[in-house]
Image (tube, rainbow, N blue to C red; front, side):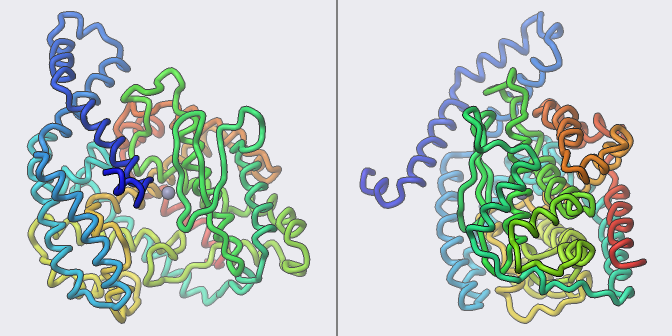
Length: 476
Ligand code: ZN
């Protein structure tokens, strides 16, 4: 055990913490206590917050205890194997090598999904998997809203292509030294009020291969990655992770360490990061404020570049094969493809043998791109090798929630764009804190959205936002 720890000390500590957390969560004592509370005559007099805490604790307990330890163990083992094989298969473009491991992974998750379906009371096994990321969300509901989203996105892409306008994206690959990019990160973090400097700072920026956010309340850290020939990549990573960080930092302090003292869902989390990255960070208002600063920081390299050209370059729309490189408009289509495939896999409608072809057909149909080999196709993401089925929809739901929040923000704080232009993010941030961050896990995502906007889940505000913004840039 000690030597295993030395080999991968980080993994080992994490695994141990997870084991400890699992032991605490599944202690029979918890079951008894929850039972006693539920049967207590005073239960009805508990506050909404207290009842929600009980409900979330019960849900976590039931889900943690119903999965046989053997299955949990086998799944964890298969994750390690499948990810390893996936990496090798991807490197040599050989889906056949990955296929048996993927099949086994899907079978294991299917077993878990069937058990969780009973515990959660969902209609299908896939709904049980979705619930882990978007509590209460179902494939039927997602299908309904994704079908509309697909039409809307394809419509915007068609308009963009019809316009014939091609932004000059060569601006984005002008070389900017890492030291300079670090100063850009400072400016971005200062703009959103993510404090990494003051004595009571609750934030910190580091550098990793893939940017991420981690932490809780008064210690929430982000990372970024600098590419010398792609400076906006880091700027937008900092804004994206900063959006995640603001959410975690502004969960109500009074709920710390309670079940409701957490984010509502992966999708709501993603709505916050994309809101800051795209709806703010790629807006003409933000860039109107930030671009002169960028020019000052970067100097000669950006001399002669006009604001309008920079705005259009960071909003370039181009259907592509790779999800993580996709723009704000085409991104959703990558997700819809994955969702449709997962839904069919777990409904037993498609087997691992047929995945590559089904994938390629959808890419051709929705995005008009031709996949040439499986490494840029069905094997591009790590999620399926890692057994993360039901995760992908959260990304696109984040956009949909974000569109709804944006619309409501416009009604509640009509002058917000003018403030952004002046470099003042505070009115927007306060609105997000008050309406979303401060609610913690009090509501499931669909209920939270309804609470905030008064509406049921709808993709229309997001599509309207895209049409308006890209219509202006592309002239349609
Ligand atoms: Zn994110």
